[in-house]
Length: 232
Picture (cartoon, rainbow, N blue to C red):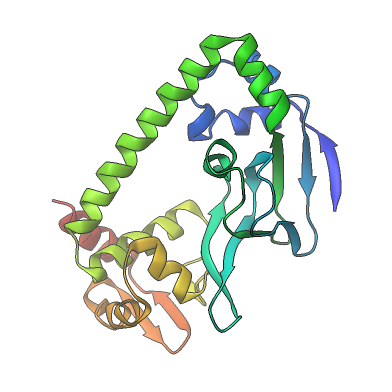
């Protein structure tokens, strides 16, 4: 693992994160500028279930896996946190304990924001708390709209929209193995793994071919048309 001080380019990326999107550059620097960016070249545990939640994290690049143990003792990935997202803030402000394990993946760049200086900055500058509350409300409205849209879509439509988002964001080339395990994708779009497998087989008409573990978007334009029709 390598570390570097948070620089202007890092602050610009942090400013795009929903939690901080309503905060001006100066106040944002006072909140986060004293931290460091950790760059990982190997899978690295950030925290374990039950550890004190004395900070939260911003992912600037790469991915972090949040996982838990099944009753059989196997590790199950709950979700994958991507670049531009935060995690563990709810645990820090809520229970005070991390409810899952977090493992940074190779190539991840992660900022840890410690609880004590963060809360001190909020106390010293009350306007910051209002800006963050405003951002959280906006984020909640977005999530409510996303959930409402998901409920109105079939599993195949949800999966098609998810795959299109991966393609257009550059997180997946549109062919080969999917960037996440099927269990993780199923959790992300609100279906069970069996429904996900069935949905993959029903997407021929959307320009998607599934052959074993290989998935290929054969016609991106047709996929866009399919997704546009599913959101009307």
